[in-house]
Amino acid sequence: MNIEISNSIKEACPHLALAIITCEVTNPETSAALWSELEDEIQRFRETYALEDINKRPSIAATRSIYKSLGKDPNRYRPSSEALCRRIIRGIPIYKVSTLVDVINLVSIRSGFSIGGFDADLIQGDIKLDAGTANDDFEAIGRGKLNVEGLPLYKDRVGGIGTPTSDNERTKLSVDTTQLLVVINGYSGENGLMEAANHCIQLLEKYAALGKCEVNILK
Image (cartoon, rainbow, N blue to C red):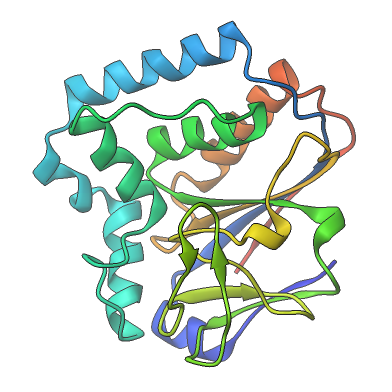
């Protein structure tokens, strides 16, 4: 599939770069070893950051900035990486979901990037990243209808599949997922993007039986 960035998004965030990972995987229950890595990262994060530091991380600050540029309040619609990091500092437990989801969470905590994870077999046609509108119907994972107007929105032929705030129920990862699409949103630019992509691939190799894999940077 092809992924296109609209002119409106490019104008709002000229430094945007995306790391696109497409690969063959399995998605078993999270292993004790992966969960231990995640817990270690959570502990390291708590020792490094205070709550007021989180939205100053470059990758999070840049995502918040494009929300404002598109007319969205980032304090009401937080980027997923910011929400996850705030949860950690506030002492709210992180749910154990599945290997693929927990790998993405681990990479997001460490890098600060909001990361979309999709079952590629459920995506219909090519993808375009554009600004969401009031006419876009979006069923966010675990939170119901999400007002995506003014959010950066990935859309396939059917409709929205993901934003930096939440992915869509229609294309979410499940135990049946074998074709994975990961999109690492670098609204702060390329700095740290390949490091995050490589970290993700290393974890997929260890825990998700990584098969054929391709990584591209899109700007």
